[in-house]
Image 1 (cartoon, rainbow, N blue to C red):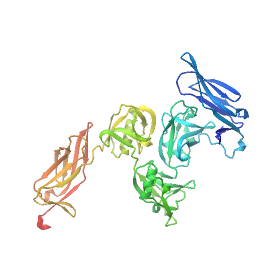
Image 2: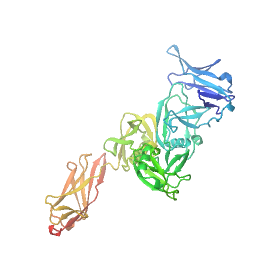
Image 3: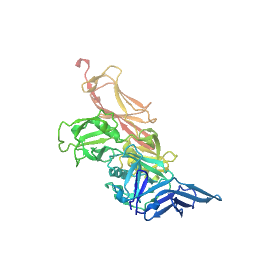
Image 4: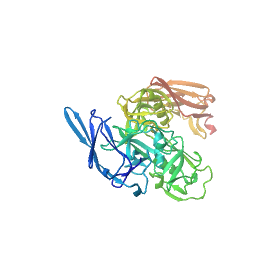
Length: 512
């Protein structure tokens, strides 16, 4: 009925409203019973799924006082009992309150550094309670949560502390499209119920800046919160140093694109200041501002920003940044990510995409140490948009297509016939020259293919390089050269091509 609210001294209940006090305990032994003790009376119920709910149909003054749950069980031929902390309840008149209670399934963030960060709580059956999941929130739902609280983008989400003794918690099974303005608008696909184990969920949303209408968490039209409403920013009032601050504030990588109209026009007001960030500030609103040079922002000039994906995923132990066991930086440390067999291809696709490593070539068994689970659809921009859990699953090794680093190509000679011309390197006709291909050490072996106008030559890689000698330069040697490094690793062929080297053949010294 929504009659419970948080007062200055603790939970309060409107007179005449019904309420429920739930006792629960972590699973240890089957059976047992709960004794609910409160001023003037006690009530007992058998434990069902390690919990018991005590319903009070109409609150009155007799219900005001201190409550506690005593759990009793007979194990090892003895009686044992354990008592919860006290819950102090006040009964009050509805008319005495200037605010109405929250709507059912409203959300809030508590114990955070701002109103847009903290542990997730939901208003359920007249009171605020923690939310627990075997699988953490999918990113779509976290975005809705930030939107409901009039906050900005999702910056971080993680499991919070394990359940605390005596603190309520509930599991919610919801199906959201992503367009809802509140979690309560999502379709509830299963019965809500008390959970007996697991973790609380912690979310950090940006407080005063967001990116909207973009493809992921790190792209969109820049909007700034002004008097609790959001305003777009004009391109003329926002530069790359401002963008660096926004990308950092939102937990993304460096700015990749900055352009007016890139993500459409805002429907509301336009920010009336020009930002003057130095690029090192933690928050956009910490930057200096000045009055705008123009009073209006022309159509098509609402600034859009694309940040690179966060540097919070890596592949380790594979000899390349594009191969190895999947790890994610979370809560101050690198953690192995565990994946079920049928989710491996989708997770690998997201990892290769986020790292800029091309597409997935193969997925191999990884670290046998079980780690926090992750589940992706496969089209996410980054791993942090995927569903994660505290269920322990085996790790995997991902091999991406851009496994090899780019080789280098350079020109040398022993006769002094090479020099730097206006258009690039030049060689005197008749002089010998050498083109060397090399690559940073990653894997042993491999070969280099030197491609140039009219002909190709191949040599095995020795100490990760190969030198191609040309004894007498003539016009047939003029043109574009490149080095292609090939190697067979992880049971697949991989190749990587250097930049082009454009060579000009010229006449002797008398021509200079």
